Length: 136
Image (cartoon, rainbow, N blue to C red):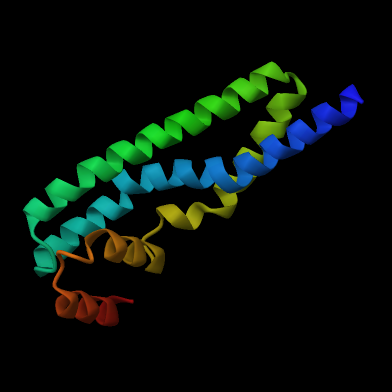
């Protein structure tokens, strides 16, 4: 019965790592990279104001980093507690998840959608739609 419990726990941690932790890590990286550059382009196009970006992004970035660190710490502790099998149960799904969800850190339609969700109340929708139509 003990081996079954370890197996089920390892399977749960592997799924959580693949579907939860890997995308969150990439999202945190994206906040400081791709999304920040896209926001700068939107400021230059006149879609949003610089003060709106300065007001909204720091909170979003801080929240993303804090949640990501909590998730990574929780998975790391779970891997350590179930070592040596735990390292495989976390490591392999983490690498696979990072490879699977790497689109998050690329400049694509997902970046546009996340920008739209963040700034929908303060952006000039006509300029934004025109930019999206011409560039995507």
